[in-house]
Image (tube, rainbow, N blue to C red; front, side, top):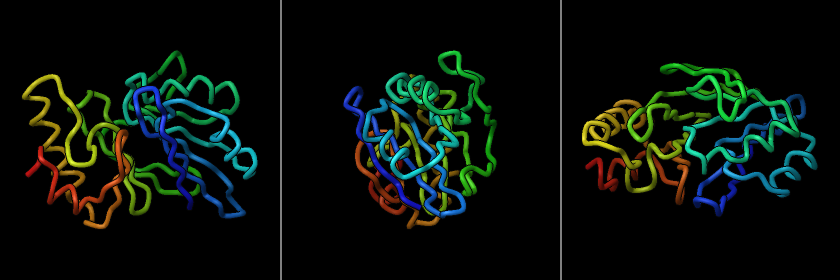
Length: 188
């Protein structure tokens, strides 16, 4: 597996391209396509990968604006907590579970608080948290209730993962579950 990071200047969001470079698979997944550029397309095309899926952590515009571009070029399945984004049908994920995508077991967790549709995805020892958990803080919320719910869900679902689990957030730098347990100002 290879993971490529892309910073989308619009909104300073992180997008990730995950490649299964097993010669029998050669498939790609994109997490939160904030903006799609030629580098991302070349990564898929020159590597001979099939873009099989797009994982949406939540549907705030600066995390998904590249989705329409991807759908014009490829035919990936879009996984999200909503039935549709920009009129594009999505494979709806409810609650917690596992799906097989690109030769990987992709675990998903519903972690509402930042937004009602917030999902976290786990592939091997990595999680993609969107705005649920950003290095050192939690995502913004609209109420004290939402903040408390978000903190509880993070402690229940994310802090129960092994400490070495790498956190790839929707903004900022990567972290680990251990670092977040020790230093996250919203959760200590």
